[in-house]
Length: 223
Image 1 (cartoon, helix red, strand yellow):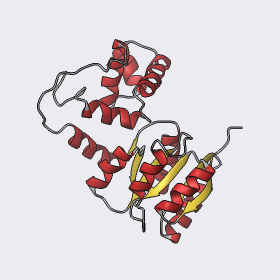
Image 2 (cartoon, one colour):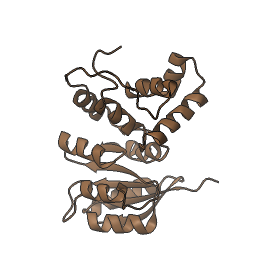
Image 3 (cartoon, helix red, strand yellow):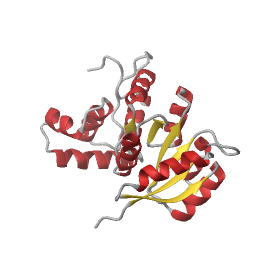
Image 4 (tube, one colour):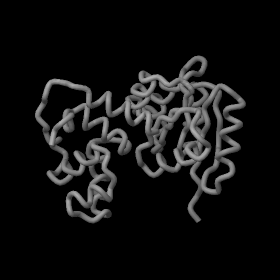
């Protein structure tokens, strides 16, 4: 049997952590292995337990969740491939973009359903992007805002085919849609995506999208 996904909960409210622990505890493939009440404790707990996923609150005393995420995922972090999902009651765009830049793999509001919370752990653990529909709209609006036209330049690390896959990926296409558009098998597309992430040193599909927009690879109206 596959080992359960190991999760750490970081939130300064005991009731919130308890609620998350109960929700996740009903799933056979998920195990809550640790908890933290602030950012400093979160960094220490993650470093000691090396979980697969961290559910991270933003506003905590002392070191907040964004800074804790930077420390966990930075060059001096835990080392183990850890995914962070930012959870917050504060529906603010600055949190969203700072979370993505800190290396978080997902962003979910605390008013999401229990099903969404459980799904968030599974989604980021397998390396997929996790952005709720309203958050996705904001990401698209932010990174496709009008800007001076810049020529699309293929990163030298990528082959022509990998560049094509990245462009489709940045536009939100699934592996199946990319496969159909480029006349490839889905397994081949998965291989290309994995190589793109490795070559560009990106954590997951979320950060591939951010990379593409920030580097002018995809822009509004570009064919």
